[in-house]
Length: 236
Length: 236
DNA sequence: GTATAAAGGTTGTATATACAAGTATTGCAG
DNA sequence: CTGCAATACTTGTATATACAACCTTTATAC
Image 1: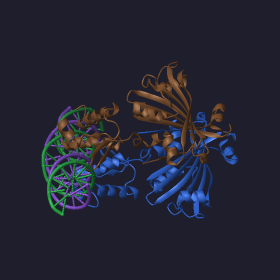
Image 2: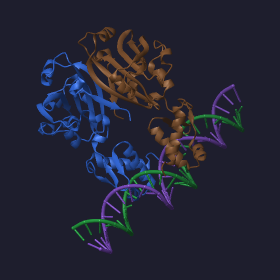
Image 3: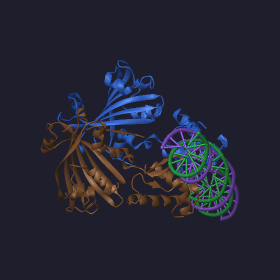
Image 4: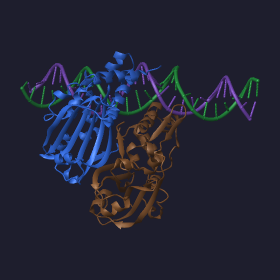
C-alpha cells in the first residue's frame, strides 16, 4: 500500500485547514464520523486525529470533540515574535509604528533566503514595536509578493504582519538564526539606544504550503532590563 | 484507574534508562516480551514504546527492534553547546583550555538558578573553547556538587563537561535564555575581541532526574563570520 | 567457504469490540 | 424560568486478532 489509510485521512484534514475551509477552533469530524466517511475502523480514524494532535495542529478534549488549534500553540518558537501578545501578557501596552511599506528589489542575501532570483521584486515593510511607548523591537520584513499580493494594502499600525500573514497564509514551518550585533546608526536612532549597545538579531524564514512566505529581521536591544531582547526557549 | 497500563510500562523503561541499566543503543524488550511481562496486550505495550519514541527517548526499526536513543538526538536544542561536534562537523579542529576548576560560594542569581540556598557551595569551571586555535566560546559552569561529586577530578582539556555530565547524569530537560551583551573586559581578553563587540550569551540550566545538574553561561562573539556565536533553531 | 533460500522474530498497519470518563444536550419536575 | 437528572455523544484506555513489511539468523545447496 503506497499510502496508509490514516495518512490519507490526515491529508484530508490538513487540506481543509490549509485551504481555510476549517478555520481556527473549528470542530473537526468525530472519530466515528471519519471512520464511516472513509470506511475504516474507529481506531484508524483515531490515529489520524491523534498524530495531528501531537503535531499541535488539532486540539482534543474528552467528551467535547476535536478542534483546529490556534496557530500560536503550533510552535513555541513562533511565539518569539508574537510581540504584541508577549507585551500584553506583561500587562503593558503594545503599539506599532509603520515606517515603510512598499515594493523593493531584493539583494543577493535576501533573494537566497526568499528562494527567488536576485533582483526580483518583493514587498518590504519596516515597523517599530513599542512597549508603553518605549521602542523595543525593529522589524524588517520581506514578503513574497506572489503568495501575499494584498500585503501593501494593509495598515500595520493596527494589526501586526504576523497576525495578517497567519490569516492569509497559514504557516507550516519556520526557522530562526540568532546573532548578536551592533545595530546600524539609523536603527539605533529608531530604538533610541546608543550605538555601542549590543542587540539581538533574529533572522526568521516562514513557510506556507506553497513556499517561503517571508523573511524577517528582528533587532532588539540586548539588555534584559528592557525586556525586549529576551528570549526563552525550552525543550519540551 | 489512577495510572494507565502503558504509563506504568513507560515509567519502567524510563527508570532503566535513567538509572543507567540500559545505556545508549541498548536493546529494549520487544512488544511481545513487554506484553507478556506486564500481562497486557501487545497494543498496550506498543503504545508505551511508541510514545517514548515520539519523545526521542527510544529509536525503533522495523524488523530489527527498539533501542535506547543517543542523547544527542533527544533534543535539537541541546546541540547548541555540543561545540566540539559542531566544530568537527565543519572539518575544523576543536580544543579546550581549562582556566578554572574549583569549588565556589554561589551568589544570589546562581543560587536561584541552581535551586539551592544562597551562599551554598558549588563546583565551578571556566573553559575556553577554540576552533583551529582561535577562541570561540567562553564557558562558565556551575555544577551541583551533590549530584556530581567527581566533577573536580576531571580534566576538561581532554573531554568537554557536556560529555562528562551526559555520562554520569543523563539529562532529562534543559532550558535556555539568550541575550546580547557586551562582555566584561577580562572575558574579552580571553576571547581576543574588542570590548565593544557584541556577544551572544546563553544561560542554560540542565536537569537530571534528581534535580538541577548545572547552570552554564556561554559567551560567544556575535559576529557570524567567526562561526561561534551562530545558533540555528528550527521547528520540527 | 559462499551464496542463496527459508524460517523466525520484530515492528507497522488495520479491524472489531468493550468499557471508562468526560462533555453537551435534552427533557422533566418544581 | 430554573435546577437537576437522564441521555446521547465524544474521546480515552484496553484487548484480541490478522496480516504486511522488514531484519536477522539459520539452514541448505553449490
